[in-house]
Length: 110
Image (cartoon, rainbow, N blue to C red; front, side, top):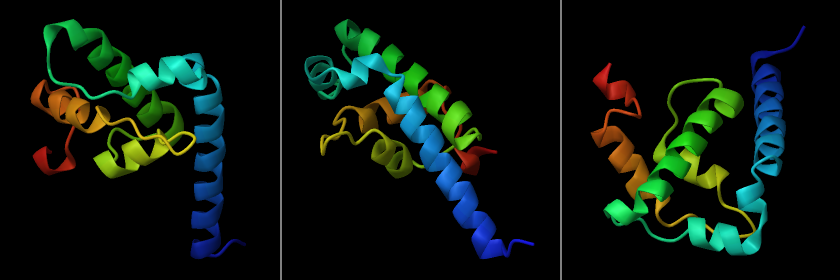
């Protein structure tokens, strides 16, 4: 039988494997130039709506396919998308916008 700590390690390892596979399948994030564009800041402009939609879909897929739950902290989400030492600077603003649009659930609101 597995101890509770061992079970947590197994679940964490499985999550890391799902994350790696998930990121490998995101072709936009594998291309350095495309990733650079996607990692730029998000200023809530209408002409940046496609960035919002990209990250909204990416976050929802991450939650469903990797975390297998409906919520993760902004820090946890951003950490998943740190690639080659690069962080998606606009993602924090997009997560805030998702909450404002009621497209991201905050457990405190339940």
